[in-house]
Image 1 (tube, rainbow, N blue to C red):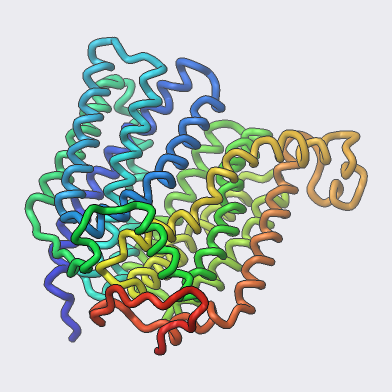
Image 2 (image 1 turned 135 degrees about the horizontal axis):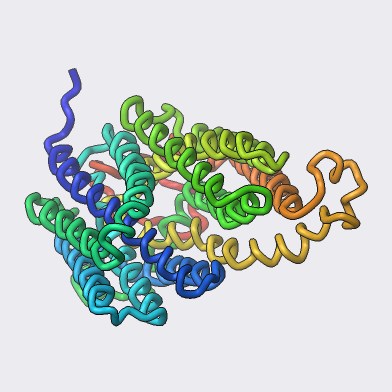
Length: 451
């Protein structure tokens, strides 16, 4: 019987600590969002916080990746969790003393996102060294499961606790959960990869960005995979922003909460499935297949103004998310050398997630000014077959937009599937984990390393 690597126990300790802190983060984040809305009655102002947070992570990812490769990763994770704990402690004190003001939310959120930006690459790059390649998919599935559990428990608990212990009490609980994560990191040892000779001097973010880009350019299959995620993230990001307005255009906030809960259960079951059974043997084909399924599901979600239909679509969509993410993360973690994972993954994040801020900014104007008017009574498509199929009225333009986004994502998957570098990625690019590969980076334009 195959025995898990010794580092799996260390991973489990860290995972439990991060699970507890994730529940606290969702608890505190939900409560803070409720407080902001109560103060402003404006969803737009809070959406701006989300946009600023996303952009901050993208801008800091190069520096975070550099530090993850050059600094002690355990210390980096520890400092990030400790910083988050102290920040939430300050929020709790301000709520308790009655001094919390609306303008303070933005710098606090920015600070929290900064700590998250530095913790993420260090933690992500540590997992392969802890669990080994054979357990990467299951570790990713467990990570997805912990996020889903946090997304389910956090808001549910917050709704009860806000009324009983107030915002200061909720923020204090959030603070305590971060200290649990800090204790978990202090209780274990996290191995560090061998350092490269060129890392002995002062770190240069621009040099590391260039290194990461050349690393990916020399492995065109990886670059094609990230480009595909950039396109699908643009489409799915718009859907995520507009799902609430779509539902609220014909239903109640209770219905929206129900759909969110059903979707979170889908993520939970999907993560558990990956943790138990793993991912498809052919990981690239698994990614392509799941992204194609997700694209088709968008047609279902936008077809009719029906809560049961949208709930089923949301559940099915989120059920597949852990499979796609686990397959993608496993590919990156196994094909990128441990010594350079931080900086290369930083560039990978910029490529694949760089479209998300555009999705957040573009979704609202496209829905309000382009697609929305088309299916209002008297709109350009109201009397056409499209209007008869989708219906007319508020929100139906968003439904049409969902169909268009699903079609765009499906076309992107089809084009990507025709790329031989992507299809043959797993055969053409050798596994770097345990191979001793470090700084062997062919010049751009040269063939990928032999399998």
